[in-house]
Image (cartoon, rainbow, N blue to C red; front, side, top):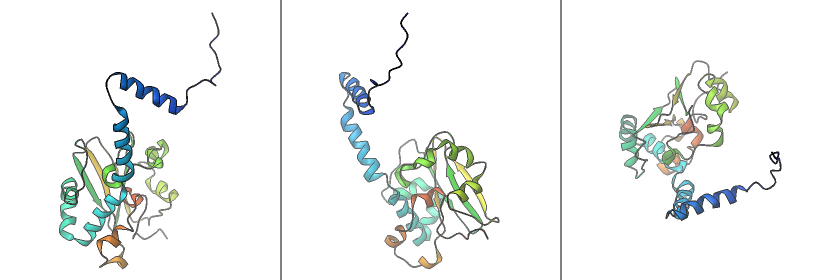
Length: 204
């Protein structure tokens, strides 16, 4: 029996493998091209953290909206014209306070409320982050540049199939009275995940 070849130089490139998969779809009457183009456009132009930044800014500026957001996040973001997939049945807004800091993760994969806060960063999908953030949250945050005071409680929230989270950060005091458009400019994806902060005191 011939020995199996160990020459991998003929392995198809990623582009060639993708083209082969698309060709199989096409032979079955499917058209993957438009679907891929649509998803690429959505990921780059529609599923962006600026959506969540608008939500946070609105909550800071409008106490009534903030209460609705905390009560039913999915309904509240719909007021701003923002939608979520049908299987994202719930959006829970987690309000940070002077004594509580919220942090989200997905221990099973990399789920986020992506239409609201944007697609997950690479580090969010990393196995090390997913495993350690629930056991060593304070240490992980410190390694990522957020050194919280020891008296601040850290609450870690693990995304499920139908429930997605976003962190509602504390508003920096000096921004009181700013228009929503200006407030939205200071809100980042990292803040809405909980690995960064705009107003919390650091550890001494």
